Length: 114
Length: 115
Figure 1: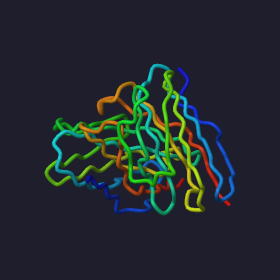
Figure 2: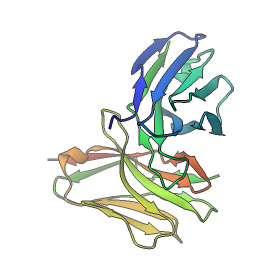
Figure 3: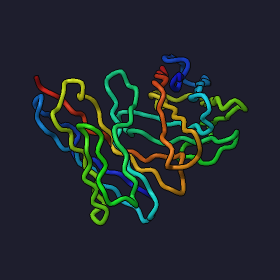
Figure 4: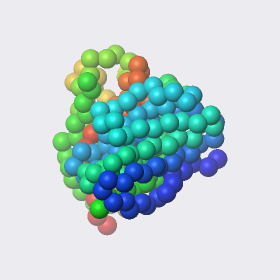
């Protein structure tokens, strides 16, 4: 079974631009969570989607948004990019939205904002 | 809100030796799971071991075992017979039974394995 895939793997954007990152979960997985990883803040939860609905949202400004499609693929969007948005963005998928189910992480998208 | 603390930013161990990574957490919930993840330099996060809070028995996975002290809210990871491939960043994580999609992570411990 293929693992969680994230595209693109690397991205360079300019301050003020917007960006869309994509996450394809493991086949059959319906829950997708997004995390931001930075050296200063560590791993922080962005949001979780299950069956096309956002179930949970972390403490990030409204510039960060996401969605999930009927095939469980998820995208996250960051508008009006700031230098501080430079980070590794990880997504994780889970079969169901229960804690007893493992979260499997993708390789991440490295976003650099200049 | 739940918090996870890893007090050791860096640890090193000699190959074939044993090392213990520390993790403490704070929660008022009764239903939760604890995890240790490994993130090698290639950046793919891999699950090492998990512990359900309702289980008293400590989890083990081959060379990896945990010491789960629920009352003390402590969850340490012991790596036995350390191998060069164990070198990575290790994260302790908490997942609530009431909020399955969100993991709360510690700041991580960088483990170096010396040959």
